[in-house]
Length: 453
Ligand code: CA
Image 1 (tube, protein in one colour):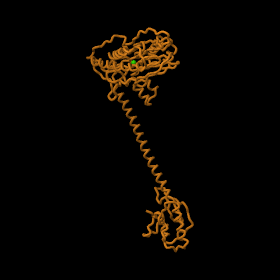
Image 2 (cartoon, rainbow, N blue to C red):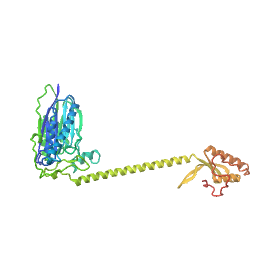
Image 3 (cartoon, rainbow, N blue to C red):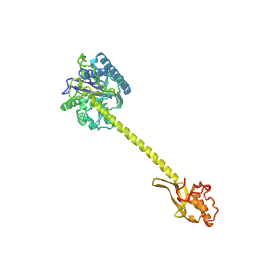
């Protein structure tokens, strides 16, 4: 058995707009939706030109990768067609179109997407949105600035970041290959459906309607029931297994189904660029009440600037946070250095006087503010006044020791000197241990401690 598709396409101008700028296509293997923009005579031309160029690749492919490549080539070619058309018809400057397309090859589909039309897949009664909108609000959602719920009502939800048109020479198109299987139902639509009808309602209709034609019509009707403020286009594609391959007649709907008419209205419609400085390709995608006034798709510059300014503010706040984190890191490093320094001081010892007796101190004889960097490590029962005068002065001025052992040796020598009844010959008890006193220079008699350099 072969994999086949049964499909349907439908498009409606909606209840408010005066012309249909959407185009839809359901062919042998190719299915597509294009939603044009560009005001009076641009949007319909753009979507029709793009879709007609794309329709040329409807056919059989050896692999989904081949189909993906064909889609990519056709979209680049369609973009070139738009650019050339604007060159020949300057009154169409600023026209553009979204394009979402899939080509089914066996158990795969190749997808191409630019703009805010959507591709959904219903599988096992669960509707999944496959494409990601190239809209300003989607960017805000992606960066966590607003929620998906807020995006639905965001004042700038119509702003497109990417479209086919005469602005970008190299349009950035999302391409991917996915698997498909019998029972899958694919649905492509313009934002006249997805922006108007809740996702759950779309899912319900796709789940509960058997024939693709009925499903497409029911979705259009649902949009109309919601007021249909925009053109609405739907393509439904069912994947089946079948013994016979049905004969397919491609279906074209929307503006692509009409002959393309260029309105030579150069005098009335000046060449307006709808791109925003600094953001190439940013367009306003008309969605509100229909109007043929150019102002309808003219960017609301102040609003954009406000949004951009707000974005800059957020960026600057992020920079501040980064700066603060940097400062904290530096402070932490300084603290770590101080702590390491303190730890080092605690590996030092000295012998001095405590409460009239010789004592071993741990640390160095310094203080940092209120923090003393030394404390009594061990007291002895050697009264300082039992020492020979020279040793007494040494103790008063403290004797440094590199280790506890060295300190204990000093204490031992002082003890020996004291045992001789303070009549010793003034042997330098601290020799070789880096004594803080200079035997050649009699130290001052006071203060008793803290005189070490
Ligand atoms: Ca639309």
